[in-house]
Amino acid sequence: MTAALDRAQFYAAARKAPFGGSLSQSQVDGMNAILDMAPPLMATMDLGYCFATAHHETGGAMVPRAENLNYTTAARIRATWKSRFANDAAAAPYVRNPQALANKVYGGRMGNVLPNDGWDFRGMGLVQSTGRENAQRGTKRLRELGYLTAGQDLEKTPALMLDSDIAAAMLFVGLSEGWYTGRKLAQFFGPGLENPVGARTMVNPDDHGPEIAVTYRAFANALRAAGHKPGAVSASVPVTPVQTAPVPPVATSPLPAPTPPLVDPAQRNSGSPTLPVPLPEPEPVALGFWGTVAARLRAAFPRKDV
Image 1: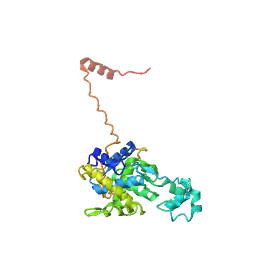
Image 2: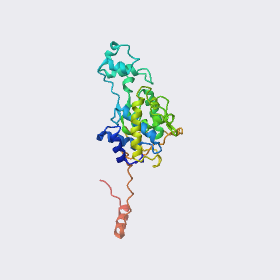
Image 3: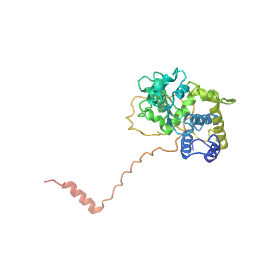
Image 4: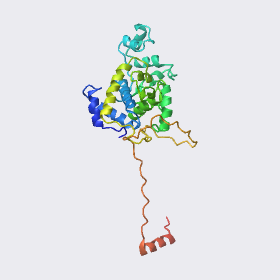
């Protein structure tokens, strides 16, 4: 396994908190995918906060999701985007109109420039990465780290952010390197430093910090109960996680040296196709005396088509 811990013990503890006594198979599958991609050197506090972020951003589902913008009342819309709508009448046209709402609240910012960019680049994945700019940043960095092939592009195909491996990479690398707000894990967790309430500002400077901090402590306790040991597994760049299209020919010009990651990416444990092994060349067959005579006759008197 990539994150060194007893998974049975982890799920036994996590089932009690933060999941309140029950876990679905889908939730377990989602957390297995996250653990499979967890950087082996990542500290327990950092990993616990990544789990807490995924829990909050997916509503506890623990699998990548696209943002649900199908609001049923104008009041709910205004409560979420207080600065965008002056009154209920202004929000009313966007009730049960998720695409229009996305383009209204996300259009013209976060790198969004086209009329439908707000919808195309609404929140996705385990961290709800939003905006064309994050898709561009993610594509460049995840290619450098080996999580994406040259033919995979989050800007051209935003739905790739719903792939479990890519979503986990965006969670771990994004929070470690400060993709979303410029703030990163090292500013909130480390030797003598533990600030799960303030850590919420890595994703969104909203008022959910205290509740996510409670979830963080539950996940961190579950990891410790399972014996999580950072560095117990050697890190290596993962193989390509998914194939969605033929990979174009490799460019002949040398690529620039990538910036080393703040956390080493983990080796994937599943879903990696094995490259086919070429068949060996057949052994030459000994012809024997009469076989040698026949071969010489065929060479001396080749067959002619009539």
